[in-house]
Image 1 (cartoon, rainbow, N blue to C red):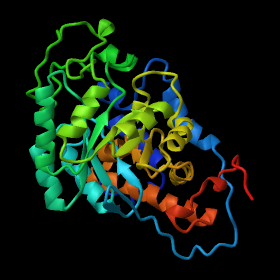
Image 2: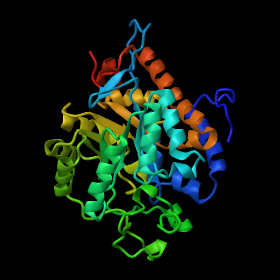
Image 3: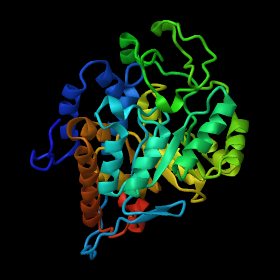
Length: 368
């Protein structure tokens, strides 16, 4: 692991992908980088952002750029969030501790995966020592009583909101993981779920594996209603692509919606998240914040997301690239690059605040 991405002239997040691939070669890198089936959506998640063109305003005073925002009463310096991703201990010796330190240094909100490599109590202790806010990503388990206990453990550890993943009742067709048999619970430590009861046989061969013993395939709207009632903190949902679902989620009482296709790791040939974002935002109509993940690689991607109605973005794989190559410094550098590029994009668009990033700054939107 190197020590200083600034000295090494890392000026764009994509520069970290190749050294991360070298550091994590083999099944771990396949897990990080892979998508479902033919990986059509995986590639389009990135490419689709570049197809959205910008229409900058001119002669606007942009001598001061303000990226501040607020979600659920939590003020943030910028609209970039670290997405929940599994097992940071597989990418860096310090694991989630390094990611939390990088988040703190860059002023980013952190979302802890329930498949993380660090126990919840330790995550909470580290976050508290850094004064770092965090949310907890949750899968509803087959054992609902265990799920309820997990919710209360996360809140007791300091999680300020829950992010329920709703798009993963089963595994996706992750060919790379099948070849390496990754995804079997044997030998894969998930300390947060260490005591979860496994009610499904775990000896199904990889090529026939559909269900995951750690994921409930029978969750319904009733479970969401139960979770909202059970949770002492706000509940957001992650994995929404359809506008009609988005409207129903809001009416059911969620505090926010994350437009996501699970990093293109579940169902291939679903749309890129940027394609789904406008419909979801229109259906939500400002009732709750909408965030989006999937393929964010440049500050212009973030500007486009906000022009389309998002309140913020989540970044996953690039954070792992930074973590695997430079540890906490790599995490903060990835986020600093994206924030700086966002500020540049805002200035060049004639948008000194996030509120000024409006749909008319997109080329295909009718303008005055």
